[in-house]
Structure formats: C-alpha cells, structure tokens
Image 1 (cartoon, rainbow, N blue to C red):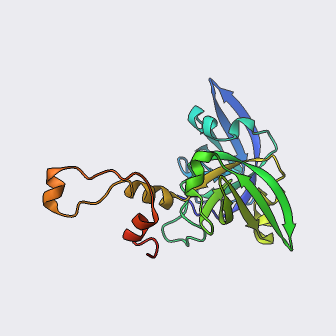
Image 2: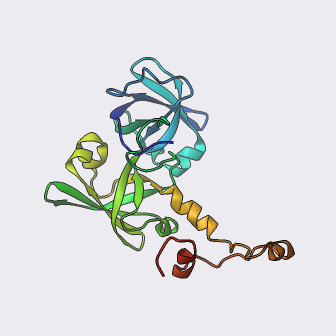
Image 3: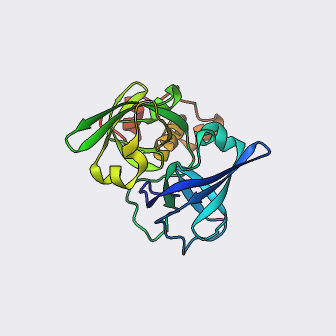
Length: 229
C-alpha cells in the first residue's frame, strides 16, 4: 500500500525487453534506499514495482505483459523522470489516501491553465472509470494523491499547488500527455457492497439469496449512511 505522497523524482536509466515483457532500471536519486530490501515495493508513476536488484543508486524491476497492457510503460524512454514512493509503513502517516499501486486505466491531459500560483488540469478518463470519480473525492494520477475539483462526464479537473508541482513530475504535464489513473479503492468496495440488498431476516436469507441491486441510487446510499435523505 502507498499514500500518494511522492518521496522523490527518479529517472529511467535502462530498459531491457525480455521475451515480450520488460526489465527497468530506475535511478532513485534522493530516495533513501537504506531500508529497502529485495522484494520490496516501490511505486513508480503510480505502478507498484518489485525491486529485484539493488545496485546502490536505484533498483531493477520486472514489468509484466499485464502491466504493459494497462499502463503507458511501453512508451517509457531512457532519461524520463518518474514519481517514486516506497511502500507505506504501518506506523507512518496517511498523508494522501489509500493507494494500491494497481493502475486502473490510462487517462489523457486535455487542458492546462494557470490559476494564480496553481496549475489546473482537465483530464479525460475512460468512460468505464467515470462513475468512480467524484467532486472533492480522491484520485491518483501518476502516483500522486489529488483531490478532484469538478467532474463533467468522464472529464475532471485537478488543481496542482506549487509544492506538488515542484515535488512531482505533475507540474510538467502538457495537453496530450498520457497519465496513470487509480480511482479511490473505497469507491470500488462501496459499489460492490451496494450491488446486493442485505437480508432483512435470517429466515428470508435462508429461503432465498439476496436480491441483486440494479445499481447505485441516492436512496440506497442513504440506506447505508453515505448520504442524507
């Protein structure tokens, strides 16, 4: 698990294609590797990678065909900068939100504009992902925990404050940029829970299975305590 708070900006130092998949060498620069062991996870642009070798100034990681199919890692180039975060410690602070490092889809930056000292991005997500994105909810973009400003269909806006722009690659995006998206895992679990109507009585539960709900409604959310009637 991760928090979406970037610890350092690394750089892709080597890319090796191996029988259809990939091995990456990431130079970690300012990321402290003193507590990292072989097999530990490091989020790289939001993708959970396993360190398979630790030469000293970075780590090697294998990237499977499954990961290549659901990320933009097949477009990576040597020299490209990447956001890095080590797996969270149970004793640490959850400064962002719960991030799994499992990318849901690749989105695209549509617009960039300045708003005082901040940068505002408009991003388009795949249509199937739109239902998980809510105004003032959380979303992970290239490993960065961000708050959604507004939503319009499958498009949403993000506000990047100067600190985030300076500590992550997020401040360098231009229209057309592909980005890794991971929606809030709590939204996924909520949807799954609300697909089924709870049994009102044990006898009814034994007599017939719980009926499947046709979808999320305001009434159903209120029933589970997620909104006001």
